[in-house]
Image (cartoon, rainbow, N blue to C red; front, side, top):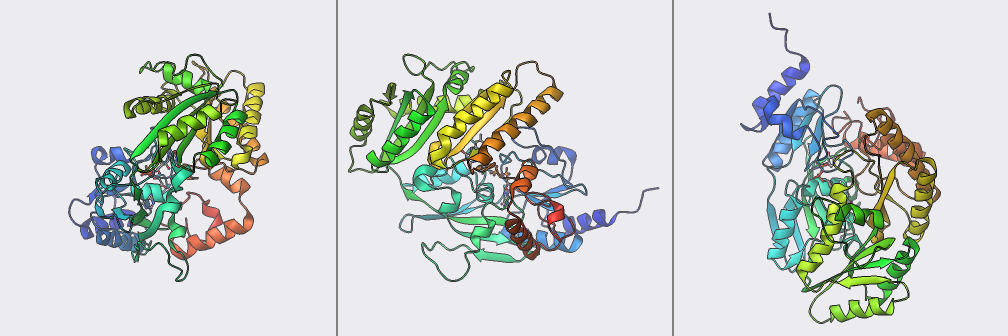
Length: 481
Ligand SMILES: Cc1cc2nc3c(=O)[nH]c(=O)nc-3n(C[C@H](O)[C@H](O)[C@H](O)COP(=O)(O)OP(=O)(O)OC[C@H]3O[C@@H](n4cnc5c(N)ncnc54)[C@H](O)[C@@H]3O)c2cc1C
């Protein structure tokens, strides 16, 4: 005899019946691709996957989930990597994939604004901006997979933060479905609006815990007609920072990227299956990948070449790309380094930040501390200098057993975070907190900030059905999660 359906099963059946046909997937084969993140490190089989097509669908879904006490987790392109976007609540969660809400609703090249649905892949949104002779400047390695809603929910940065700011700086308005199903239509494209609280800020970087973002109004910019790329070798991170400080002033703030890569990273790229050539005539301890862009009335190439010549006391060697294609080859070094740093296996990822003025000390202190305690591990260091956002990753020795690898990751992360604390930095500058960084976040959080965050969570999601247990521990909120 079949067991009677549980309350959860009844609520799910009611949800399936209420939603437009084809919205809810439940079969193992259908939900598999929504169960694993980009790396495969985080897995969680959802109770079901909802794929709404409209904001009304999301609203209906949330009304039912709220009434039935069904836990929900919004999902974008699964590139967040902190265990926040896959199902994991002990009682099970319904994943809400925004992938079918993927339209660009408008691009306005006079307002320099576009309105994009949350499920639009970042790269597709960028292409549509370009079709209107504009750029959406959010740019990073996962742009072919991540989605606008995920970018807003994690306040993504990337290579161009230096010039254009991070996602938070680019959001003009949001449309959000709240836990109880109400829709907040804040999709304004106004540049200035001082009428009351700036509510969108609460949802940016909230990692799905406060509402489901269904669309965003974003700033776009005139498309540059000139882009110049250079790769230079310098003696140390200190020298790279000296070059950065000069470049900000002497290149009329036309820099769009200033990427730091230590030699170990270049070696990973040139030894990857792509077999890229060593980019300069001999190896240097530290490399900087520089990009500048401008419109028509500036001789950008002369500006960059002149700057690098004048900085001859810092720059040991360098190449300015002769063409776009050569520029892309220089960027390929950065890409291949990221792709191959784990030699196909697991490695410790960190995405920390420090004040830009502390970046050189942070890198040298952390690498020294790692070398003293774990000489067997390989640190791989690179990052976006313009926002002080550094990856100091740790690759375990080949053939190390899984338990030893876990112990190594734990110990080396603690070492890196201790140095971050000494410099007043952040343990998470990219991927967010999710579940993976929660303990480290809570250990460091200001009690007043935690109290305020808990109250905001309670106010917006009193039954704690949205992404429960991400960022805030269940115990620090008064809901039932
Ligand atoms: C190779 C690589 C390079 C990266 N480089 C950078 C970088 O340079 N700078 C940087 O800042 N970050 C970087 N990231 C991290 C980046 O911030 C995230 O990958 C991206 O913004 C997440 O988008 P996603 O669509 O994949 O979201 P997901 O991973 O699916 O979700 C991330 C979080 O957002 C929530 N969420 C997703 N959609 C919504 C929605 N519609 N409403 C509410 N919540 C939602 C999820 O619940 C989860 O908490 C990189 C990641 C990778 C894999």
